[in-house]
Image (cartoon, rainbow, N blue to C red):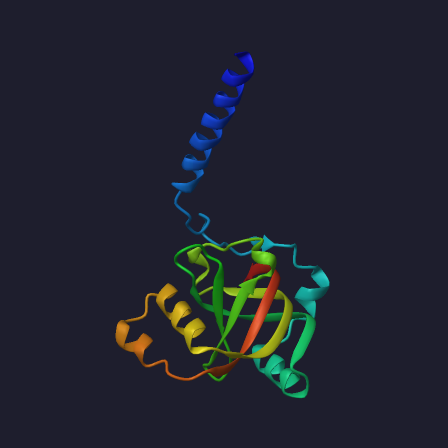
Length: 168
């Protein structure tokens, strides 16, 4: 009888705790994204000194489709409103490149929008499917007309950040 009571108690607890975690709302982390704030792995002092511009990254990616262990300095133009799981950085020619967090290990606050950052990680040129483009357009709360205008795959720079630091 004690065994049955113990098994029922464990089963009931499992169901209750599973329900509790399923109802938690996921949102970007809180924070003002002040100069000096870091997200993910610590951006090394060496990376800060050797950070290149998005334009220089574009040149490197024309020679090779992938560049590893690179630091980029740029301005954040957009952040995922749902979780803070991606962001975009503006290049010198007013284009944007997409940044995801390595291993989905960290998120950034939406306050990062408009701030200058140093990103450390890997970059590559990828062809992005129509479905994936539409998914990110929905995350960015684009209008239905903008989403419907996405009709063909697009080649773009993708950056996988291991660490991000807010700078002046």
